[in-house]
Structures are given as structure tokens and as C-alpha cells.
Length: 226
Image 1 (tube, one colour):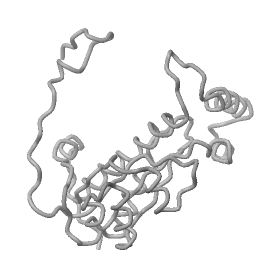
Image 2 (cartoon, one colour; image 1 turned 135 degrees about the horizontal axis):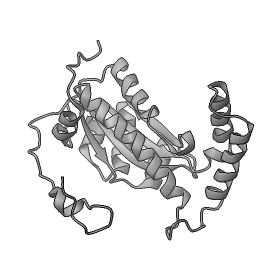
Image 3 (tube, one colour; image 1 turned 30 degrees about the horizontal axis):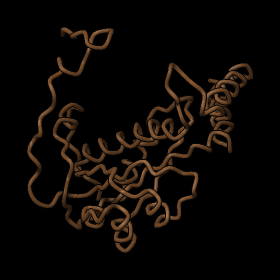
Image 4 (cartoon, helix red, strand yellow; image 1 turned 135 degrees about the vertical axis):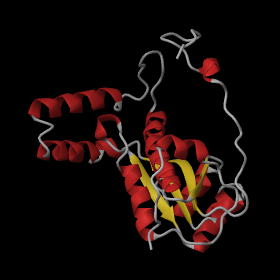
């Protein structure tokens, strides 16, 4: 049975979330899992290219193997679900761009002129990953990581909103994760998200830097008054 959710303001969900170190074995309801995944798929992405891919690891033995690729972190094996977030830097030129354009045409959002503009822009930006944009090398790996983390965060917050606990992880050996999950060599492993029910007490609130220290007004270093 899917989790009965009591609607909470989004800010309450965000502020109450804590990284979970240990999980009970209680499974995640399939309808809840589907909703968590769909929340990620609804995330925004540049040109709507959606360069993310996800591997859902539920098999206990597979989670055990994945744990060894994640520096032995127990929560990888304990959590009933681990979502492995991936970024595909080649998807845009191997079908995703044209599929996105076709979907846009069906919805009346893209015509021939817009389609050609999109193709030109993407070939100029993603087709030249060593180019310079605003003084920063965009890099396809950096680009897919940024896009994928937006979807990853959507999933994490949806899981928390459904009453589950989560543990986002970036501690792993990418080549080993790729081997365990049979991921093609060109696909980047971005992050892992363990989902389940917390075992033990919740972590205390670790605190955050004050807004005045890290948020600026129009230019870096100028205090924002709110």
C-alpha cells in the first residue's frame, strides 16, 4: 500500500531532511517508488534534453556488490532502494535531441525554424565541449552532472515528502559502479540515493551558514538586505 502523505509545506520538507546513516529493511512501496522516479523525470533541463539515466537497485545481492564500489558504506546495502543517477553526454546526438524536437512539434511548441535554431545551438555548445563560455570550460561531463543533479534532488525531496528517509552519496569509485551495474563506458556516474526507513534516531540539525555570509546583492561580496 502506498504511503499516506500528509501535505507539508515544501520548506518544512527541505529543512527537516537529514542524511540517513542506517536503514530498516522495510521495502519502499512500488507506487511510491514510481512517484519518486517520476518526480525526477519532471525536473527541468536545458533545451529539455533530459540527459539523465537512472538505475534502480533493489536486489539485495546487487546492493551488496554496489556497497563494495561505494567504499563499503553500509547504508548502500541496508536501504531497500538505491537509485544510481547517471548522465549521458552523448544522448543528445544519438537520438535525444531529435526525439525532444518531435515531442515539441506534437505539442505545438516547436516549428521548423525553432528546430533548426535548437540544432544549431546544441551543435555549437555541446558539439564543442572544449569551447569557452563566459571564461568557463563547460565540458560535457560538467553539463550532464549539473542537469542530472537537478533531477536527483527532485527525487530526494519527493521521497522525503512521501515519508521516507534518504541518503545522497557521492562517495564511490565510478569505474567500479560502472562495472557492477554494467554501465557503458561513456556514461557518467553522478550520485547514489539510498531510500527507505531510518533505523535509529535522526541526526540533529547541523546548522547552516548565515545568509549574510553567502548571499550577495547583484555583485559578489555586496550584502543583500532582506
